[in-house]
Length: 101
Image 1 (tube, one colour):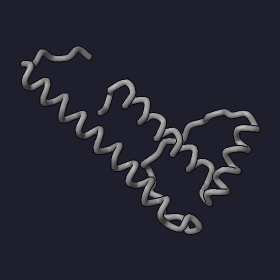
Image 2 (cartoon, rainbow, N blue to C red; image 1 turned 30 degrees about the vertical axis):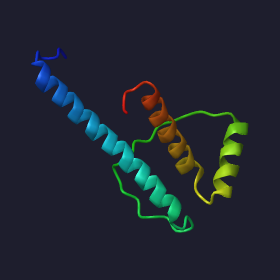
Image 3 (cartoon, helix red, strand yellow; image 1 turned 90 degrees about the vertical axis):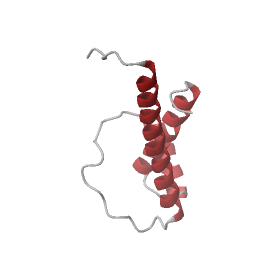
Image 4 (tube, rainbow, N blue to C red; image 1 turned 180 degrees about the vertical axis):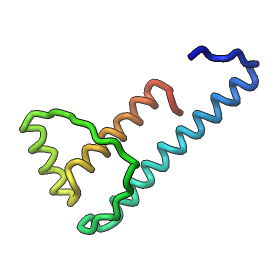
């Protein structure tokens, strides 16, 4: 796709609006993680279908064992913990690269 030429004012506003929306989505994700951590993890919340996409990731057995052990100590699922790690690290990298502020 070729970007359409825009005046500098409207381009800055659109860029700022999209960045604000992106930051709000990230903050909402962190708020959801914080809320989940406050809840009793023994009871799972109802699952919202269609909000995630399954992927395959391969890890060595030692890493999976470490992840499962840590998840057990935190009384949560290892896949949930892995998703939290990825989201948190992605956020930090985006901040470091100044994708978000």
